[in-house]
Length: 126
Image (cartoon, rainbow, N blue to C red; front, side, top):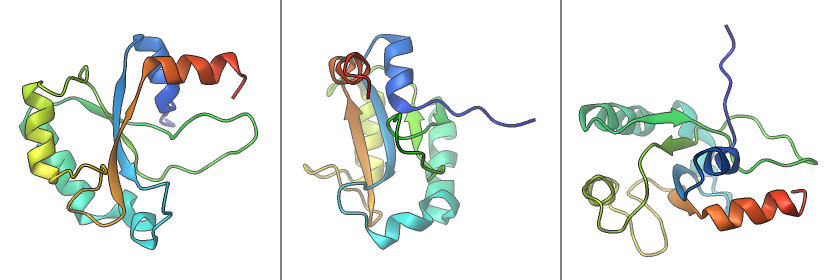
C-alpha cells in the first residue's frame, strides 16, 4: 500500500500550531543533502527518536501548486515547539544544532515553520 506523505505546511495547518522539520538544507542545495533520505546518519537519527519516544513521520517540503518534488527524507517531529521543551533541548544537543539551524550532518538542518507562515501561504494560494 502506498505511503501518503503530507507536506509540512499542511501538517501545521491541520494541527493549528508551529511545527518542526529536520531535513536537507534547501537554502544551499548542498550535494551532501541529496543522500539524506538513504543515509546511515538519518537512520541513526530515526533510531534515536524512537529510543527517546519522540514521535515522527516522513513529510514533504512546503506544498506548491507549481512545483512537484520527490521525497528527500524530511522528517516531521511530532511535538509542539518550545525553546524550553525537554524534547527539543535533547534533540538540539543530539544533532548539535547551531544558531543557523545547521547540524552535525553536512547539508541537514532543523526548520521551524510557524502556523502564521503556513496560513499565509495558503491564503496566497502557494
